[in-house]
Amino acid sequence: MNRAIFVDRDGTLIEEVNFLSKPSQVRWIPGVLERLAQLYRQGWQIIMVTNQSGVARGLFTLEDVQAVYAFMQSQLEEYGGRFQAMYCCPHHPQFSLTEAERHCSCRKPQPGMYLQAQKDWDLDLKRCVAFGDKLSDLQGPLQLGCRAFLVGTGYGAAERLQIDPARYPQLEFCSDLSAGLELLLPAPEPLLKHSSP
Image 1 (tube, helix red, strand yellow):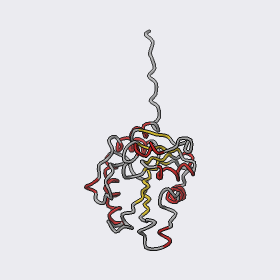
Image 2 (cartoon, helix red, strand yellow):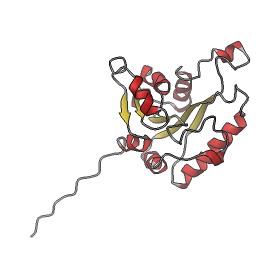
Image 3 (cartoon, rainbow, N blue to C red):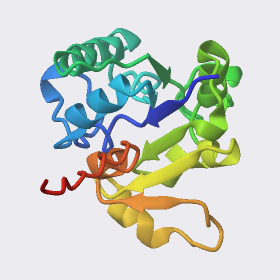
Image 4 (cartoon, rainbow, N blue to C red):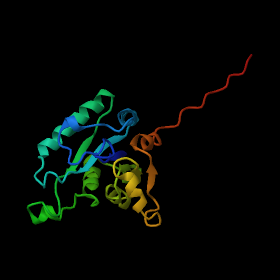
């Protein structure tokens, strides 16, 4: 079974832009591309998991979401990494048109997108790690036994002040995604001291 890094998009991978809909709006959090590429080369699956209610609200289309993803994929590939997949929930409990979409199982904090990724990529969820800037990004992964980090970018710093540590004792914190990903990299080999003959 495989291990994966689940990453939220807005505020975690890239700077928060309210209802981002165009590749030209993408601004990566510093250090993220390099770290993701390193972990990809170490055998991690990199999976984007994102709520995009702007689709249900009529602000942009799923094709727009795919265009942003394709742009981000191409930029990560320039560093030698790759997203295995993107899972996107386009629904909203108020703005979606059908009853099923208004009560979907994919919109975070529901675990549907993570369970679908587990099925699609044969993942061992206990070996997976999730990153997000909202508690709702991480409730599903925590429920499924993943390691989970709240980043300090996007809404993360404000979100942290609202979280009761006693309720989420497993939740970890990092200043940004790059710092959190660095914790997953293997420790450097110690330098061996050579004695003089």
